[in-house]
Image 1: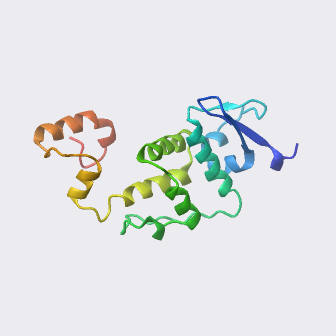
Image 2: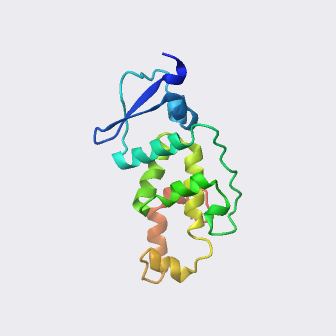
Image 3: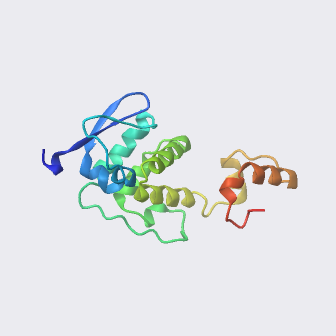
Length: 170
């Protein structure tokens, strides 16, 4: 079998299997690149739900030829993410149905070590906070209590691993 014709089978946590061009997946996934003993004859079992795995496959398939991601400048100066990314990436992001799906997609991109997708998700997430007032963000995320020192300490303790190396670290 020619290398261009090789396919890899990815299996979701529910057991559904999807075939995808091996070279395309190799192009975007450091996880696949690092699998020297990967068998193309057996499904690769993934701890990813079927709908999210389908999104990963769509992302790869839509970009397997002639894809050049835009370099995303930081910090973002506008909440309009379409100013910073390709149209194909913008359309992909528009199809994410919920914040839960966005989070699961982020975890799947981390699982496969997909730097291009991770950078896209990070920029998209950041764009959601730009140009928003404190009140708008509090309403969006259901934060109704005022921030007290006790709540701030509780949050810092709860998320200490995330805050490491940031100005918010104690």
